[in-house]
Length: 375
Image 1: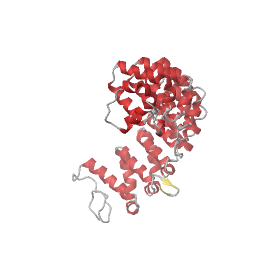
Image 2: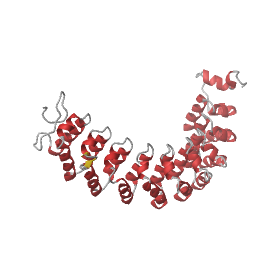
Image 3: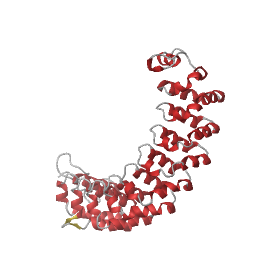
Image 4: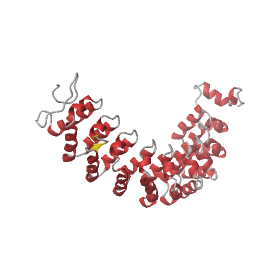
């Protein structure tokens, strides 16, 4: 088949693209396998056919694409065919593709399409080859972490490689945790480290997070790292964070990012920790009742709602009593209505609607909130 003038495509590919009438099989395109792999429709055709192909046909396609495998890995459509072989091919196919990647892992990891192939390889190749591929990133961890493509590869290494194989990644983070926790990609990688690495491995990283908690909670990315420690860390990690933010709960509750951390702290803390937080929330803040300051605030009101949800028995009663004390003022707040409705709902659940219990707080005005009588 001669090359068609338009776009330099071969005649067979042009025919395939323009007419669906001719039923092509894999063996028909072998001479033009590379071109089909790099074409949107051709690539999809090969992928679909490989799903049901015989071992013989798979081998035929694999032999045709192997010489160009490396350049297909960074191709918009070719990368999908390579990934398909990693999923559906034989262990030998996977091994040979991994071999083709040797010495090029960093280059591929920084490429928009190549990074997908590296991630797939890390998922599917045998342990020994996986270690070789991951090991090629030694000395380039920071370059990858700060890269929009490479960071996904580092995350995959942490998720799939053994603790020993990924140790060099953790080592590179030590001393740079705060800088990376406040980076849009770095914060994701730190979260994967906290999720997948052994506690003994992450201890130095946790120390850096804890010692910089006050800065991190106010950062648009760093707050997620602190939340992650609260959710996935050990009790002593949570306690260490609380000790850093004690006395700051009301101020943090009024901050867009830090308020999320206060909610997580309420959710995952011990009853004793919650009591310490409630002491701040029901006390005074800059000469005003703290609970009023929080309920008036666009972020603080959510913290109050979370506290109402997670506190139990006497703790919850104590918070409700502090809110009741200021009911006339609360009713005037934009967010106060939501909180009153929230309390009415909780109390209705507790006592069962219509079974007595304390009167609902209710909120005046048309279409009043809450389950109580309208004023």
